Image 1 (cartoon, rainbow, N blue to C red):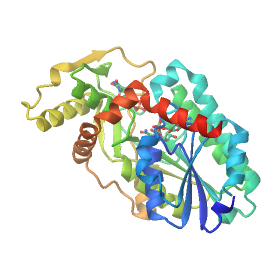
Image 2 (image 1 turned 60 degrees about the vertical axis):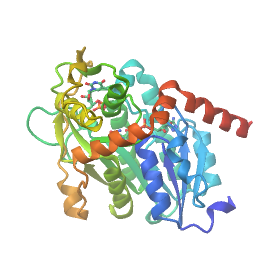
Image 3 (image 1 turned 135 degrees about the vertical axis):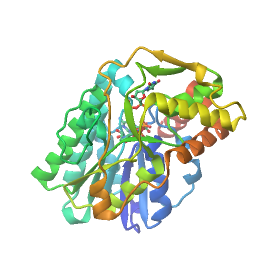
Amino acid sequence: MMEASGFKRSILITGGAGFIGSHVVRRFVKQYPHYLVVNFDALTYAGNLENLTDLEHAPNYRFVCGDIANLQEVRSAFEAWRISDVVHLAAESHVDRSIADPTAFVRTNVMGTLNLLLCARDSWNDSTAHRFFHVSTDEVFGSLGQEGYFIESSPYDPRSPYSASKAGADHLVRAFFHTYGLPIVISNCSNNYGPNQFPEKLIPLIINNLLEGRDLPVYGKGLNVRDWLWVMDHAAAIDLLFHRAAPGSSYNIGGNCEMSNIALVRLLCRLVDEKFGKTPGASEHKITFVADRPGHDHRYAIDTSKIFADFGWKPTVPLEEGLRQTIEWYVNHRDWLQNVCSGAYREYYRNHYDSKSG
Ligand code: NAD
Ligand code: TYD
């Protein structure tokens, strides 16, 4: 408990061993040496402490292996580290997995969020001194046709078990603002890409398959459209909103970069072919159209004018540049890819934390 004293804030970042969470943890640890950053993560298949080895010895960083769906574990962390703020990213995050097993999504995304809200409500007396920042997705707004953009006041219309569970969490977070005055902020972001993303999501999956010479699965006709954002731009937006957004507010975050899946997969083929000196398009014959995802949302697109008008935030990395950097990262981290594909990283860290707690 003593360790939390001496720091200006003690921030519980949940899901910090995952893709976006690891970039957020690194940013907060490096930018704010006067904050204690407590990374609370259950190390599911998507959580990998290899993402954060560079921070292991940082004086303002701690890791706690814990499950947000376990109220007692969350309460203990709040007490032990005198948590003053939360940045909540822990979630089951993959739509296809939510179709296969919705229960895990309700457990972590809904019950886990409720547990964090209860602990924050019960331990924070002066609402002006704290922040509960909830990281959510644009998928809560449903599916767009060819036209239009999601704005902050767009009606919720989730269609997958993943987006329904995130919508449930968003509603609970807002309810705690209105009912208990908890100083919450919500962000709803479009699709992220960059280093450290688990290769089940489209971009790292395609890069991994290109590197392994495997087929490139495209759902349906590949005409679904997503908006893509460089993950470190997302981390910068979270940092900004965490410090400056008004309690009770919500902001959309996006890349202003819409692309159909088939165009994106072709672009990845071109960039990887270029990198390895192959004829442009040489890998395209690996594209394989496969059965569509059930209930596949057609299009997501974000109107980012509120966060730009209020704080001047806008995405800084153009898609092609970000994809080149992402490809470079995966090429230089083949061991990381192999570890996450084989599950070796889980064995290592699970044994480590089991033996520590036992
Ligand atoms: P991820 O799947 O890469 O990481 C999730 C992390 O949460 C992992 O480290 C995992 O171990 C941890 N976790 C899962 N269940 C847990 C539990 N019960 N208790 C504690 N930790 C648990 O996810 P991501 O893509 O980095 O997404 C992070 C957040 O951002 C999620 O809330 C997601 O909904 C949101 N989001 C993601 C995207 C995207 O494009 N990836 C876009 C918008 C919003
Ligand atoms: P994904 O990365 O799973 O993100 P989300 O479903 O949350 O937007 O998928 C991005 C898009 O790519 C989505 O329209 C589904 C499609 N997709 C494929 O065509 N093939 C794949 O193998 C995967 C994983 C996704």
